[in-house]
Length: 175
Image 1 (cartoon, rainbow, N blue to C red):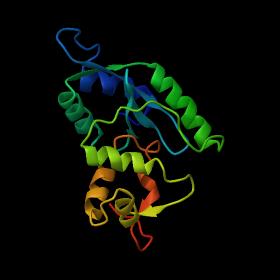
Image 2 (cartoon, rainbow, N blue to C red):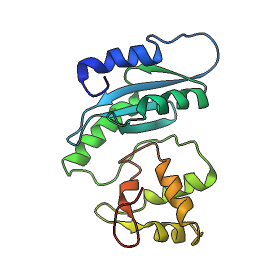
Image 3 (tube, helix red, strand yellow):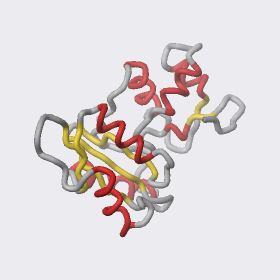
Image 4 (cartoon, rainbow, N blue to C red):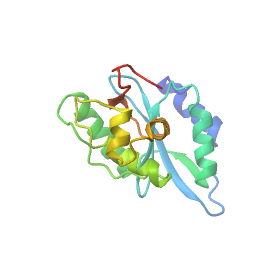
């Protein structure tokens, strides 16, 4: 349902409840679909910044979003947010080779190691790759190769936090 534009709203409504309840405490997460040349993406933002960006055809998307809402004590609404408008603009520029880095506020809850890992990923220049071993070395934890890979796997903001720029030491894709 998330793959087709017409089905997106209905799937969202059926999965997350539309409109959400306004009762009780909790964070509001704005979510919408963003079409790109490499496929549609599911994007979410809170007032602090973009907090989620993944492909809509991801098998675990629905479960992941429900888990995040529970973890963040959040209610998700379908609609626009200033950070999502900026994200869509910058993604469009990125895919037309007018942008190589993103200047978007991000909200990335995680462990300190995960946050450091994600910040390091953003330092890998456009068009370049590094190995997990190199990433671990840059984090000051040369033996933490698997931990770096695990942090990358938990990256919730694809493309903007470019975990796709990290490869195995032999140049092969991993994970």
